[in-house]
Image (cartoon, rainbow, N blue to C red):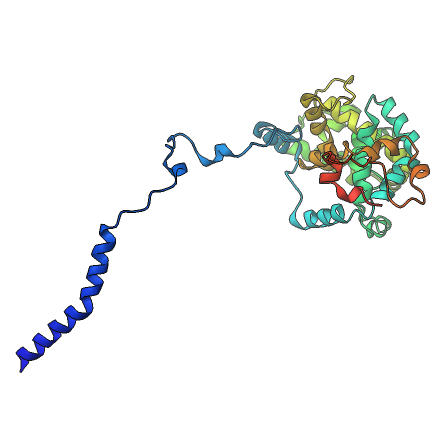
Length: 345
């Protein structure tokens, strides 16, 4: 009986496994289909897929690694905004709800912008580009923050009190305060840490030496409230704020070793545009700010606003209309492709 069962199991196995084995053998004997000719071309070993991608052209707003390290180490320039501020900025840029207001404001102060730029030998479009970016990103809560004394930057160009210290706005008052001993505690701390010679009479420091040893925040910390209010009033004055912005750019230009004859006019030249990039980032304190300003300088609306004619040409019209419509079949302009938020009315 066991022998009969074993024989029956072998027979059933042959019945079921036979077709499977036959199909496998026939598939192995069938030749594989010939691959397409495009796959038969030899691929050199040194080629990588990335070489088939068109590399992006270098931008004058980009910084070399050595520049990034220097700007961060010496001046505390940040690489970019924090994620929350980036989201707010992106939303404002996308909506463009304050673009017209910014352009009309520039048009209203066009004469002051032109004069301030001429006094500092600067391209007025650079001032206008910074004003455009700052005005369109002003938050509704800034007026309340200013009244409460919590705002860090003030005015059209959003400039801080530290810039006034660096420009010498308080120098006349600093001489008197220094002679009266307002900065004795800060200077004694410097002597205790060895940053100021212990045998040096800090009461006899010149104003230039005082600025060398004390940082702007330290000076502001010892200023009376009346002087702080005086500086805030200057920043909140639109005309004076524009002049302070021009002096800031001129100061940074000199600080960066750029010739005072450089007005930043011919921005099609890479070297000039990159020099401007090194200057404008000091206004905002972030390296990605250079991209925004260089892109804003390409807007044709900015030139019209600088002429003071933005009101006359656009009041009551359906759309801005500054950018001429391309001819049929022509490629859209840079602004129409990448900045549609400014092309709508």
